[in-house]
Image (tube, rainbow, N blue to C red):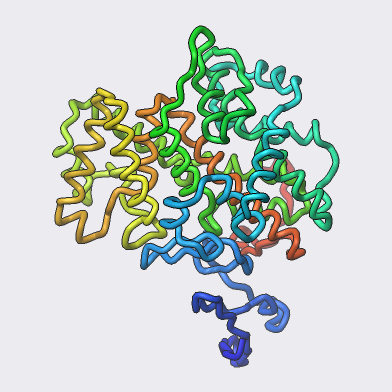
Length: 428
């Protein structure tokens, strides 16, 4: 913090320290601005230029297409690690030893049973309920079955809470989907791996044996890794700000799920498939919709291309494209919607308009294709996103609490009416 920023307000000059991160990011510390200037604040709609915290978890450089978890590149983690290794890394700060990973896996399995009364809560939802609403409610309901607050100063208590939610969350995800489909709720098998067990719980039919497909397992494992954290996005910031009130872990996660639900955030991969369905209903002419996307006067948006953070390319999309090609090739799915997706992809990658603007297919585009090919319903896509993001939310909540961050309380500039006299109803 050797550098100083100077701000002149009302003829007075104020000095503020500048933080520099390990990747040379700079930030002016204005935490004392309101106090020293006697009331002056900043306006930053959407907090696009505001650093809400100091964090050691995820580094993201959108201009260069860089994403790292705890210093490890997303490319290397997706190639060499599995989802639980990445979850351990995000939450506890280092890659686990084999002994730590075995214990982590074993402890998660021990916590993979939820209270049977959760089934009663699921039964209370109509089949028409959106899975994200169900998942948020079930996550919040876990508080009722685990009423004790997490002792953040106890490593054991924190660890038990982590393996508890990592064990139970896949059950809630699978049950949410099976409730929607009218299928019996299944617990899977402890002998299976984390991803294999999830797939069995989701897709096991009551009258036949479930057979694992290693290509599907690998693709889903990579997808969850790619979604595990993404710096201070909307849902992560929500988890942190809710947790800053010292709300419990489950309540904070439930709030994050609700934030992720929005179509501008986690619902983007669902929006991709809804767009593709719309193109199909209109005849499936991809040339027509490519032209519409390039027409400034046309309100149509080509969903799943470009990214508000990555201004060059989405590094996650490069990784998952290969998995998407493998899944489609292995399953041999004949689906006109997926044919439209492949057509849009190939055209966009070769179109000067899209290439010049770096509007490449992003992770939401490819994840939607994979989930569709796997047979996951469109309205479950964001639920799968939530499962992947779970370790990141936990890590961010844990970091926020251990750093004893103050309660989140943004300011505002009031633009309403000034003081007015009350008018009795008969004179209005």
